Image 1: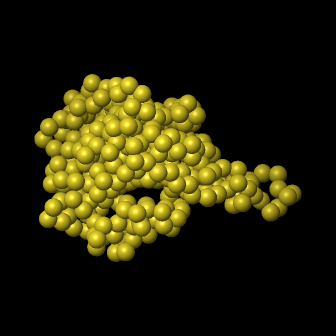
Image 2: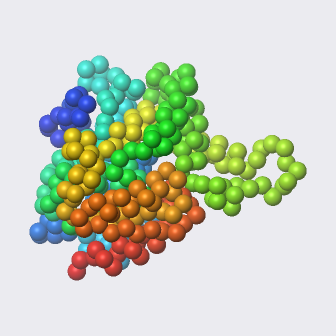
Image 3: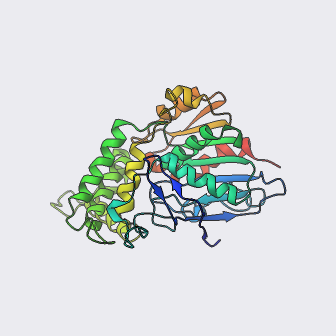
Length: 338
């Protein structure tokens, strides 16, 4: 499937009080929308992913898969602030004619959802059978299920939470400090890339865990004094991200993660989650250090029709991207429609 672009006529009003004009959202769809416009499986992606869910979540989309293209109309939209087709820091600021860069407005998870809501209406979707997302994607799914509770039958948040934790915010701030220490940050579209490579190295420590590193990055040569396997792995992952992302989107979206709190303006987290009417399957990863399983347990406990499932994995937070068979095994028998 090719990426599609939708350019709404109305400005996108942001929670911070700013607004985006001439904005656009990039998205992918798979399968066909039925006559009732209600066979929809909406996927919300995480921090550095894009709208091509079939690419970054292999095995999850296609005939007979969890997101069965013979049954569902699958939609995934690239989030505002990213760099894969939707308006973000590298887009032109209409007031200056230059890229926004580090002056891009503050966006929140609710702003990302607002853009999804506008796209949903454009696509003529009347009801969403299931909405699913991991990490930042799960935060979007929860927010949307609170703001439009009658729109969804099923909510499937994976490795996520109802509000940002101090632990997660600290990791994000450490990554931004690395980016901002790069003197090229703010000096052009390619600014801050070296810093972002360091930021990605920090992020990996939260995405995985000591078990994973011991298993995959331990050097067999006990006489080695430098150039360790773990060092080259960190460098490789930093370089890999530098080739496909930018430092401005990275700082924008980590700030978006920081401000996530479903209870903002709604009383408490518990009061906000109680508004969800969708049957909720909250899935955690046993070794997730960044979004520990108790955060998904809280969601399941507070949603009126919530259930908690835990996947035993050594991959930590990245397990939501890797343990696809286990995730599908939980969800598919429960939510499929004929």
